[in-house]
Length: 416
Image (cartoon, one colour):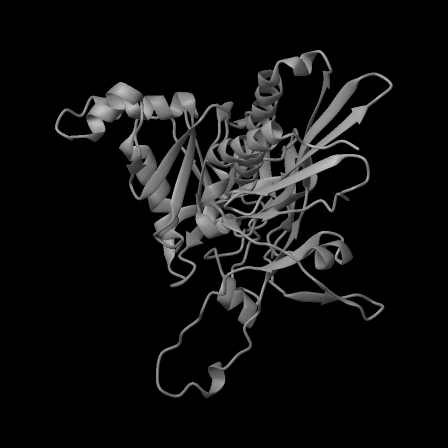
C-alpha cells in the first residue's frame, strides 16, 4: 500500500501554508460551512438568506402598518471541483525537491483558481457599475466606487476592491505624483502599491476578467409595467412549495443585435434609491445582463423593484424610484472592451468550502489539510508497480455565491 514519507508530510505542511498565503482575494469574503451529510442529501445546494431591509412609518398609531417580513434567499452550490494531478517516476523521485516543486506549482494553481472564481463572480454578477470615460487615475475613481455604495445603503465597512494590474498601476502613478502626502507616496512610487483608499482595501490582480464591448443598438423596453414583486417561495400547480431566487428578472426588450451576458446598462428615468431610506439618489440605476438575447427577453440583475405593486415585500426591497416606461431607452455602459475591476462588501460574496470523503486504507495514501478560511486540500498518492510510476493529485472543491448583487460592483475604464 502507498504511504507518505516523513519528508512528504513536511512538504505537505509547507504546501498548505503556501496555499493559505496565496488565497489573497478569497479571504476577504464571508464563509459558510455545511455538514457533509446535509450537503450530499441536498445535492450540494443550500439556500442562504439575504439581508433583511426594514421599513419605518411616521406617527404613534401603527395599527395599519404591522406586516410580515419577507425573507429572501439565494441558492449556494459547490460548483467548483479543482484538481492538480501529476506523475513521477522512480528515477525522478531520487531528487526529492522535484516532488516539492510540483506540489508548490499545484497549490499556486489551485489558489489562483479560487481567487479567479471569486473575482469572476463579482465581475459578472456585481450590479453597481462605475463607467469612466478616461483611463484610471487614482483617488477619484475609488471615490466613485464609494459614492455608489454609500448612495445604495451598503454598510460602510469591510469593503474591498480588486484592480487589474494596468488600472492599479495607473492609480499608483497618480498617487506617486502627490508629493504632499507622506508614506503612501513613497510606497506608490517604489512598489506601485496604493493600499487603503477611499474606505476600500485594494488589491492588484495579475489576472482580471475582460469585458467585451456591448454591440447591440436601438435597445428599448418592450412593454409596460415590467416591475418585479419579491417572494420568498412559490407554489406549483401540484401544491409543492419551493424557494425563489429573487436576484434576477426577465425583461422584455427590443433591440438590433445581441445583448451578451455581462453587458451593463441603464434605463431612461429609472433612478437608484437608497435601499434603507428609499430616497432617490438622482443617479440612474445600473443593471447587468445575466442571460442575453437579441430581440425578446433577457434575464437581468437586479430585479426592478419599484414598489408599484404595493406589496409589503416591494416596500422592503424597493431599489428604484419608478417602473420603466414602455419604449424607454436602454443605454449600454460597456461601449469599449476593458478589464473589469470588481469591488464588494465582504458579506455580499460567500465562499462555501466542500469536502471529499476519500477513503483511507484502500491502496492510495491520503492526507488532508484545512486553511484558516475552511478550504480543505486533499493530497493523494498511488504507486503503480507495473510502471514504477507514482500518481499524485491535489484536490479542492468549493462554491462561490454572490448573495447580494446590489452590494457588489465593477469599475470599467476608458469607456469612449
